[in-house]
Image (cartoon, rainbow, N blue to C red):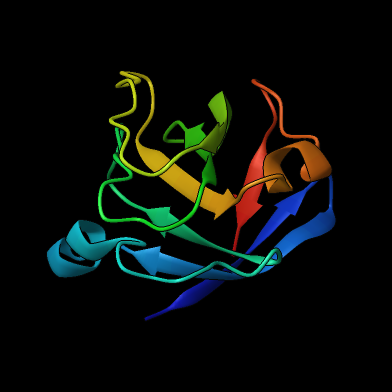
Length: 114
């Protein structure tokens, strides 16, 4: 799986973000993983809604538009939940619970994904 680095305001926020841009990778997501490192995540493309079925831990979810602007942040989503669809989102960044607040993600933030 290809990995990306996420930048905000020219600073590195995450260095180990997996890119789920193929059907099977998107389908699998973080299901069945035991944990997620605080400095890693998963970017799902295309995506505007997620669920946390078959997950064993809570996650933070950052919804991004086509220009990588934050359109919604959902913190501490527990296992077994279907999240709300965000029509403006085209990508979803799944993070370790607590990372969105730690990184200060807010609606309108511009991220750079490389």
